[in-house]
Length: 340
Figure 1: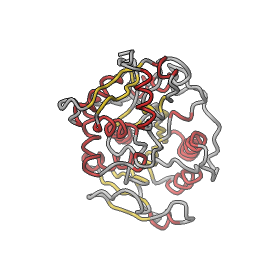
Figure 2 (figure 1 turned 180 degrees about the vertical axis):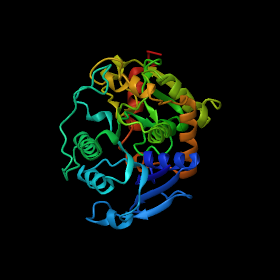
Figure 3 (figure 1 turned 120 degrees about the vertical axis):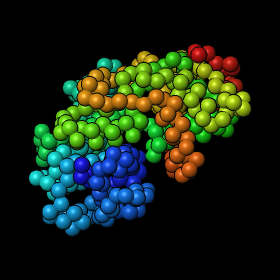
Figure 4 (figure 1 turned 90 degrees about the horizontal axis):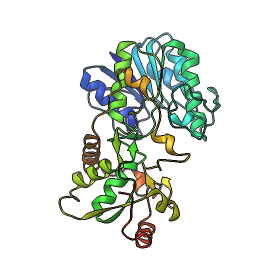
């Protein structure tokens, strides 16, 4: 296939580029050249898509592609401009959206037919993430209609994860000591490795598959225990006995005022309004060919990426994860923990 990736230097875009090249596809990326790295083997075009006419100048008027992948997360009018520019020149326009477009709270068992937030494909405002992603969906659908592929991933893990949720747990466990582990240990997780999402997009483009898909694993693809134990293994904290996972029940975590998802990345309680983040019905995507690799592979490869390329900025600016002082205070107050 002839694949165009808008961006393509980090997170899901980078995963798409690398997977496409590994498949033998012809890959072109279009980006500003200001973040991430260009992939060897891909043709690189430079343009700031926020500048009027920049994309058109970079792409010219005759280039055609079998598949275009757009991961844009800010003002949706940029997606609309790209879609209009490429209309009639592309087999499939794939837009990577998010399950965040569903109206809150997201109930357990929700599928692609769930209610969504309002969005405007022509909006130049990207301040509301959910509305911006919904606007991007509408832009792709308005222009490409039945030839649009809209992927709604939830939690994305794996190498190149810029949010830093799994990287935070890896670095925290690497430091050792008593690690506050949110229980229950068998809490089921629902996520997608960015590389598995990339494979789904590329295979869909190859097969001419279009439509709306919630592209995450089935609920319980892995557990919180399996994730953190894998992190202890790959960082060497398990073999050296440097880290002790102290499992704490949801009730005690709530009593201590520790915030799910943000202070305790990836984890949410099994009950309550956050439970749907790990409980979506993704049978449509799984039936269409989405496959999800084992959690140990995702954890090991994320660790290898961190060791080779360094941490994402979110780990140094404190925007993700539990403050060490607050963790120590909570462990002292909670004692040996419970809920394993």
